Image (cartoon, rainbow, N blue to C red; front, side, top):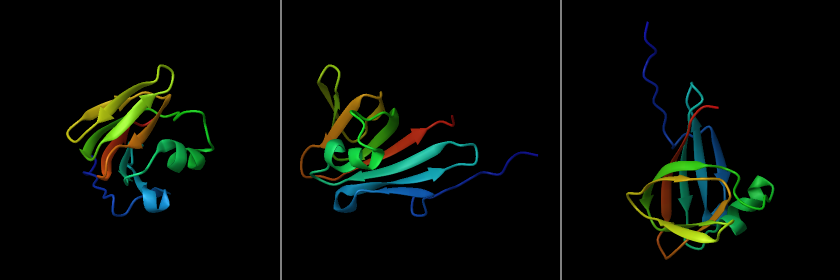
Length: 118
């Protein structure tokens, strides 16, 4: 017998990363271990100031991010070579570990992120 279709909504996440007035990330986990995240970063948000302390203050973001940009402009900087890449609405992206990022401009950044089961 086939498994039933699984539907989850970000309005009822399994976990949340709260960055107070600067945004947050709602996290849902599917039964096979696939993770979906809805990230909202307000103007002024930066990885250095708002997310790094919540992760134990690593030198750079240790995670790979695969996702889609819904709104805003996120600038991602690869720390090793100091290159900056803007992520804008409609971009499907794959960001390797070793980066930081910040919201550029006055518009909220909204992203959907995916992570395959480990």
